[in-house]
Amino acid sequence: MENTNTLTEYLTERQKFVNDEITNLIKQMDAPLQLKDSMLYSMEAGGKRLRPILMMASCESYGGNYKSVMTIAVALEMIHTYSLIHDDLPAMDDDNFRRGKPTNHRKFDEATAILAGDGLLTHSFTVISEDNQLTSDQKVFLIQELANASGPTGMVAGQILDIEGEKVETSLEDLEEIHLLKTGQLIKFAIVSGAYIGGASTHQLESINDFAYYLGLIFQVQDDILDVSGDQELMGKPVGSDENNFKSTYPKLLGLEGAIEQKEKYVQKAKEALKSAGIKNSLLEELTDYLSNRDY
Ligand code: GRG
Image 1 (spheres, rainbow, N blue to C red):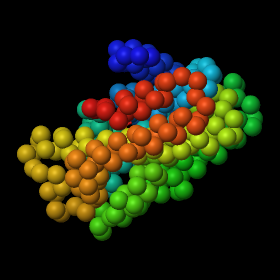
Image 2 (cartoon, rainbow, N blue to C red):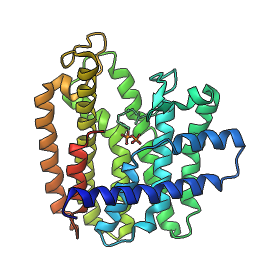
Image 3 (cartoon, helix red, strand yellow):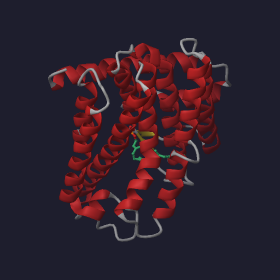
Image 4 (tube, rainbow, N blue to C red):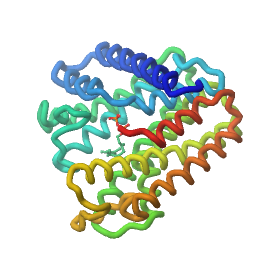
């Protein structure tokens, strides 16, 4: 792909495939109506589908067919969506809106939102275990990797470190550790499982793992940069002026210019890792630039 239009078309097409598969897999589920409605509400609320798209791109980069990872991609999006539903709850961020719509607990109620999250988390493993395109060995590998990435050694660990980190000053190193767990682990799963199903060798999986590490950091630093731009536009305040909250971000620790420089360093490292990963096309490199410069 050589220009932005083509990449935008690629992203739109892939989002549509993912959206269709999401609707299909959740509608088939034999669950009480209120629960199903609540799960479907958040799954269809308009996410960017970045993790599924990265998984498909990683699979294609090793010569695989993106359709072979569609169910795994939806399973991953189920876990991502569960984490957002729970993150928005009153006990956590207490948010009223997500993706421009009322959060799950505002649309339904708190108990239903907790259960919708629980349902999405557990059902993600069901859909992988029932995917007829996968061998038993592949299912075990994927289920183990996904559980490690999302559970108490991955995203859930990152979430508690993040909550605790809001109470004290944190260093750049602490911040990287939190993000690598909280958001980086699911991104890593997307890349590694896509490469695995696409046919990458053990050595290639190790190299692509390094790429995924930096991509997770790029995603987060850009998220922090976008938050600052949004805050400044909304409140006319300087970077890091929210003195009542210790929550670290890249711009707070490094300043806006420093955060942008740090992002460029991660981009360089990510591209170096891609070079040694034996990739057959430039798709992941283009997605790296896209994620690094995204404005939403
Ligand atoms: C509750 C166990 C538990 C974990 C929550 C990821 C997370 C952990 C919370 C989300 C908090 C947050 C907004 C983090 C910033 C980075 C991030 C994950 C943004 C949302 O991901 P996108 O931009 O969202 O891919 P969409 O809506 O496009 O799917």
